[in-house]
Image (cartoon, rainbow, N blue to C red; front, side, top):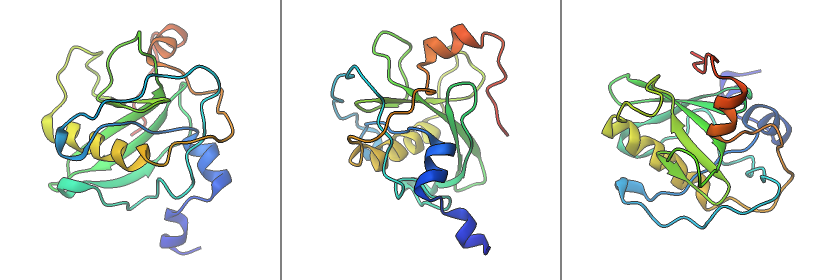
Length: 166
């Protein structure tokens, strides 16, 4: 299998590794109002939404999509100067800690070991918002992914979890 073929994820591989992911903020850092969270199953995004190598605004690239880890789908982004950020895609929870970006069903949190107390680096936040914007318009009805947790559920189930995957 070529490197290019292995960088793309088919529908089943996407479900197994990505589970569910998306978020809603406009490119350029201006927040677009997100629809309120809806009860019920969390849908699976379309398989073309995420692919290793996806180019995002401001010189960021989607570098890796990791398997479900402690209730989240970790996604690795690489910046224009080689900087790295892990984005944990979780189920949206309007009563929980505010994510960098959100959609109708999902919340994207930066995994910076700050436990919500460390501010997100602006360029990283812009990358997360751009990733959310890519995913946002494709969010729709699809099979549910019950393993995806909200941030509050994740902290409750894995209070001493090691969330970093890289």
